Image 1 (cartoon, helix red, strand yellow):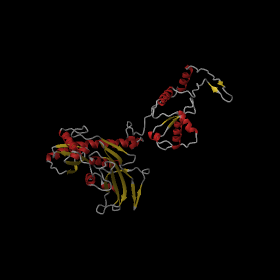
Image 2 (cartoon, rainbow, N blue to C red; image 1 turned 135 degrees about the horizontal axis):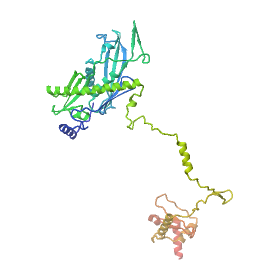
Image 3 (cartoon, one colour; image 1 turned 120 degrees about the vertical axis):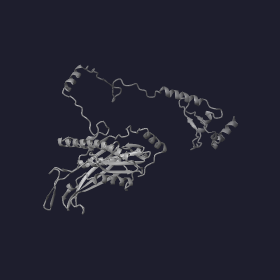
Image 4 (cartoon, helix red, strand yellow; image 1 turned 90 degrees about the vertical axis):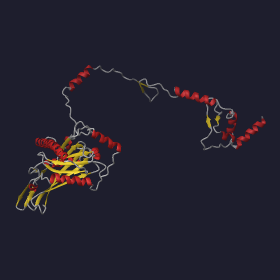
Length: 439
């Protein structure tokens, strides 16, 4: 897991806020984030939201051969996955130290605490037992993964139902849910992890740290406890020295938090079971809030359409009748017709803007420097003979303006390039010299 380190400014800001007993999300020192539990359509599927940290839990079962040293006990298997979907810092395809530590802590919390009766999972001693597999997927990481994962695991186990079986001699019959009702697991107690973050070598304490608070903490204490105040496991990491009074203080806080979380889980399970029995709607789609933009359903508003026809008739009767106007066609020429007065023909009529443009253009053409002007008569005589016309591909070309209204034979020319004036074609230059000699 490669996390981008916090800058010194961010680190000082967080530590300063913790010293003043202020948290970024507005909580108090010992407050937990809001917990929300939603169940899927199938048994054993749930999503737990601890603030913005989300964990998906899914339980599955399979008939397998038991272990040799425990022939009459079932098998429990826990697997937690950290994908890049939850946080970009998680590396796919390899088990990081954080993932190994979290998996071991879950096994100690749930399997070693004997919260599930593994002997009730035995079908045939030494031959067939149930293997219960709990898969946990981290959907979003905002700190305190272990608490959210432990809640998701115990909720999924409590919600799960395994198929019913019967044994007759050596034959084991597995019944589908339609044939027999599935059987819930035998759960003795519900252990839940509570995390405590320490700062400034144990001077300051926070419950349920978020992702940014975990980056600046000096140590972490995790206590797994049930509602009977029985400690199932305890783990300290970070290399800080804790006093006995600090540990006892954390255990008392954990007892209160675990009791509240256990009550919330039981209410959620009871509500889901009640909805399933009554035949109501259940599943992840039904748990989405209607106010969100991602809602899949919309409440229908009742509309009374009983007196629509009567109201429509009243509106038509009160309305004024439309004027009766019959258009007479106008025949201009044989084979054509016009209905109505039409619009005046504006073909060939120039608009005001176009007239102004022409006037400005005419004024520009009239004023030319002396060195650029040429006699119109000379140009007309030049063009009358069979002299070849040289066309240039360059951008500096002559611009010829035709004025058919005044004199179609006369052409005004405006030479743009001074170079072309100095070097005209050879034949027209000779004719100019002859004319000047005669004059």
